[in-house]
Length: 481
Image 1: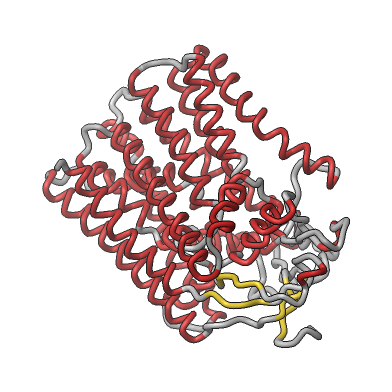
Image 2 (image 1 turned 90 degrees about the vertical axis):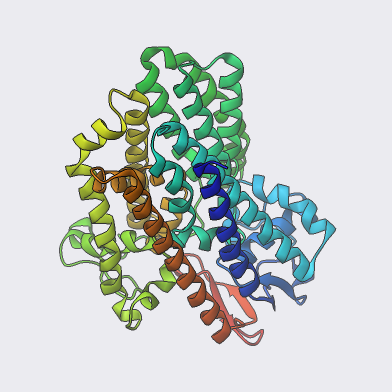
C-alpha cells in the first residue's frame, strides 16, 4: 500500500471514530412544535435530534413526505394551516428529497442514527475526492500524499458539521467531485468535450440544488479552466454552467412564484438596522440585541477566524474563560490564520519554485482557492450587514463548504515552512501537524459530549418567534409559551 492510500485509510478510520462520537453523543428527544407542523398535528410530539438545526431538517423531510411540498420558511408566509413551516426552507430540496425514502422506511431513534450515518458517509466521500484532487495537483509531493486527507478531515468544524444531519455533506461531496473532474482534465491537458461539459454541469447543478453556497464550485471551475486553457475554455464552460443553471431554474421559479424573489432568507435582523450605519460599524461598533459583544471590523474578523476552525458555541470552552472571554479565545485562532496567510504571502516565490515550477495547473488551483475564500468572506459580510447578523456565528459553515479547496492553502503553507528540510523530516512534521489537528478534534468531541451530558434535553415546547425578532423560537416547558 502506497503512502497516499495508507494516509487516506488511516484518516477515514479516525474520522469515522470522531463522527460516530457525534452521532452517538448527540441526544434525540420529543418536541412540541405547534407552529411548525400542520394544525391537526399541533398536539403530537416530534422526535428530533438536538444537533444544530436537526429538527428543522426533519420538518423539511416530513413536509415533502406527507404533503409533497416544500415547507414555508416563516409562519407569516403560510397559506394554509395544514402547511409545514421551517426556516431551512430557504435551501433547495435535493438532500431532503433523497432523505424521504429513509423516513418512510424507518422512524424513531433508528432513523436518526441512519440519517446521521448517511451524512458521515458523504463527508468521507468528500475527504476521499479532495485527497485525490490534491495528489493530482502535487504528484511529486510526499507531504501532499500524507497530509491532504487529515488536514481536511481533522479540522474540528469539519467533523462537527459532518457528524450531524445537514445538507452540507452532500453539497461538499458533489462539489469535491466536480473539482476532481476539473483537476483531472487539466492534468491530462484535455479540454472539456461536450459529454464532459454536460457531466460537469450536471454535478454542479446537483450541488446547487443541494445548497446554494455550492456556487463556489462554479467559481473554482471557471478560474482553473480559464487560467489553464484560456479562450479554449469559453464554450465548454458556458455549456457546463448553462446545464447547472437549467437544473437550478425550477427552484428559483418556485421562490419567485411563492415569495416574489429568487432567493429567500427567513431572518430579517441585519447589523445595519434600527438606525445603525456603516460608519458606526467601522467606528465604535454596533451591538445588536442579544449580542455578547460590540461588533467592529476587528471583532468580526476574530469571529470569522474562530468559526473557520471550530463550532461557534464551543469557542468559549477552548481555553479557560467564560462566554465573555470568547473574543479573547478567538484571537488565538486568528493567530493560526495569520500564520498561514503570512507564510503563503512571504513564501509565494518559494512555493512556486518548489511546488509549481512552470506548472499552470497548480497556480490556477491556488488562485481558485484564494478567490473562493475572498468570495465567501464577502458573502458573509453582506449577509451580516444587510440580512442577519447571526450569520457571523455560523461563518464557519461557509468556509467549511470550501474545505476541499482550502486544504490546498494549508498544504502549501506547510510545504513553504519546511521546504528546506529533508524528506523524512518533512513527513515527520506532516505527521505531527495531522496528529495535532486530530487531538484538537478529539478535544472538541469531548466538549460536545460534556455539553450534552449536562444538557441532555431542551425545552419541549418551541413556538416560532415573530419575524424580525432575531430569534428562531420562543421556548418553554408548557404550551402557554
